[in-house]
Every structure is written in C-alpha cells, then in structure tokens.
Image (cartoon, rainbow, N blue to C red):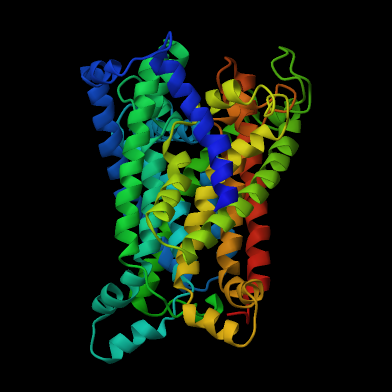
Length: 537
C-alpha cells in the first residue's frame, strides 16, 4: 500500500487541498461560513439536484442497455467480435468535448436528425443521457464482460438441471457472482456522469449545469475561488459517501468463484431468443455508437466544395495563427507517448493497490479503496489547477517536465485498473495459494503461478482501459500540457474554440484520427489477449 498511498498523496491530495485552502482561507482565516451561504443559494441547489438525478438516470440507462452487450461479448462467438469490441470502446477514449460535438451534429440544429425528420434534442436532458450512455457503454461491457466470460457456465446449467428456469438460474447463480463487477461498473459510470463537463456544457447549453460545469464557471469565468472551493468540498464528500456505500455493499457479496478459460464458455448463438438478443445488441451498437462516430467521420471529409482530404492535409502545415507551435499532426505522437507512460504508471500503482486490497481487510484498507476512486469523482479542473500551483517549486518542480501529463492521466487510469482486477483477484480461491505454499512456493512464486494466469486477462483489459482514458483525458491535461507538445484532445478543444470552417474541419479530422488510433490499439490488445489466454486457467 505504501507506493499507491504516496502516489495519491503527492499527485492528488496535495493539489486538491491547495486549491481548497486558497479558496477558503483568506488572510490566514478560514471562511467556513461560506459553506452555508453558498449552499443556500437557489441556483446552487438546482445544480446539486440536477447533478444527482441525471447521474442516477444515466447510470441506470447505461446498465439497462449495456448489460445485454456484456453478455453477448462474454458468451457468444461470432465473426468480427474483436473489431466490434474495439468499436464500442472507441467512444470512451474520445475527449468528452468531442462526444458533445458528435451528438450536437447528430441531434442539434442542422444535425442529421434535424435534416431528415426535423427532430432536435439539444438543450434537452435526453441528449445528455444518451450521450452519457454512448460514452460509458464500454465501461459496462468490459468491466462486467471481463468477469462474465470467465464464470463457469456449468454452474448455471446445473441449476437448470435441478428444475430452475433460465431466468431463475441466472438470477440466483450468475447475478450474485457478477454483483461486485456490476457494482464496480455502476460506480464508475455514476462518477463519470456526476462529474460530466463538456457533454453537459455543449448539449445542455445554459439550461442545465452540473457541479463540474459550475466549478469551472466559478473558477475560470467569475474567478470566485471561494465558491469553487465549497463546491469542490461538496463533490468530495458526496463521492466519499457513494464509495463508502459501494464498499459495504460489495464486501457482503464477495465470494470465491469457479472460473474457466474464456474459450471454454463461448459458443455460437442458439435458438430464436439468443439470435434475437444478438441482433438487438448489434442494432443498439449501430444506432448508439456507430451512427455518431459516422457523423464525425463524414464531417471530417465534408468541405465547402464537396468531399475531400483538405482538412487532413491542413494538419501537416504549421498553424498560421501561432496557437500551436508544432504541426497538428504531431499531437498524435505526443498522445501515444503520454498514454504509454501513463498506462505503465497506472498498472504499477493499480496492480499494487489491487493486490493489497485482496489480501488485507479492515477500515484502513477500506478507506484506501475509497481513496483510489476519488479522482473519478473530483473535478478535473481542480486537479489541473492544483498541479499548476503545487508542482512548481523544489523538490517537486515539474511544471516544465513532460512527465506531468502522464502523471495526471494515470490518476484517472488507476481506478480502472483496480476495479477491473479486484473482482477477479478476490474470486481466486485462497486454497490454491495455500496449496502452492504447502508445496514450497514462495509468496512471489505463488502469485506468479496461481494468481497471474487467472488475472492475466483482467490485467490486459485494465491496460486497455488505462491506455484509452489516457488518450482521451482532457480536463486536467488542458491546463498542464506544454504549448510545444499538446495532446490530441487539447488540440481538438482549441480548434473547436476558434471560428472558421477550416478549424472545425481540422477538429473533425483529428477526432477521426484519434478514433482510428484507438481502434487499432484495441485490436492489437484483443489479439494479444486471445493469443495468451488459451490453456492457462
């Protein structure tokens, strides 16, 4: 636990605490009275209420739509499965500003639905909810599906033989086994949607506002650090309560599971019901994920004089305005380098944390578990500003160092590593480790021979998630990325903030490249995972 605790203390707790201190401590005196004053304002209460209920609605809708997809990916074998898995993961790595832009082009004024049927959903809560499902679909599919694919289907089949219906067998055998993984996925979706920023700002306009958008407005627009600090503390406490409830609920349901190699559990769909489920999942993926991505690709080629590669060619030339010190095409290499380093950091920190949480119990460890999830629910704006004001003097003068960006990205990647690996690690039967110890294996060898083969698949899934979120991280990176080495999301956001057809087209082109890079990376990961998981469970 020492290394993860030190990492979070230095790169999360310290920056956030510094921002809160600057906002609530004036002339050496703490302004605690501002809590009551701020939280009694009607507009702030409206923000708090909307943040809560839209996050709950988004989480429920995401689980409802994505759990059938998790089952299909876990249990069915079909042609193009790896490609489709990569496709559903692409939205998650997109900058949230591009998610909002994609749905604005789909459901907003002059969008596809407006042109075809005169239907507009922008400035409505439905556009926000659907965009959140689009963004978080892969969280449920990969987190729940990763464990589901390794559950022994013979346990459910035994219940069927004993007279249980298909629904009762799933409800009494499979669902309890999946409960920790489903709860972990729901927690991540809730935290992401509760702290939603760009999606709400673009699709909600001035009608809707979450805590994240309000913190940004108070910090950047109004320069009211006191109100921003109060809202940050409210967000911090709310996330802590959610994590405490989650930890208590999941701990009661954890149990050792019988696990098999994924190849042993998959088969072709059989019967009308399974084929109907498979077709329904394909249709939902096509409408919810492929269609918005297709709109982005189409806009990247659509110029004023027809379709062409003009926007892509413009990425190779220097920026005439001087906003970007390097050609925009260089942002691809920057993003990939940062993402690889951030993934390594997240795997090391998250792997150590998951191992510690598996082998020890107690209030201290439960508090440590909650600490690991806080970066998903605390404002990225706060973290980004905190990096700027804390890591700028010895012995941690990192403002001029490239490592600052991967460190910020790893903060968001670690929770995914922990939540992906923890259900599988806790499902390993402790008797296997004890048997290895009796046979003379050291703790390291027992982990290498017993745990690693069982969790290798989860480890690779965790690596994919960490790499994905690093590619698309925007909230903190926008404040700390150096002008001579911007990332793809930062470049896209800056292009969208500038008027003109060329800037918009270049933003669409960069977003398309980001999607392709992500899809290729995830396909390589799928191939690596398939090659190395056979015969090892």
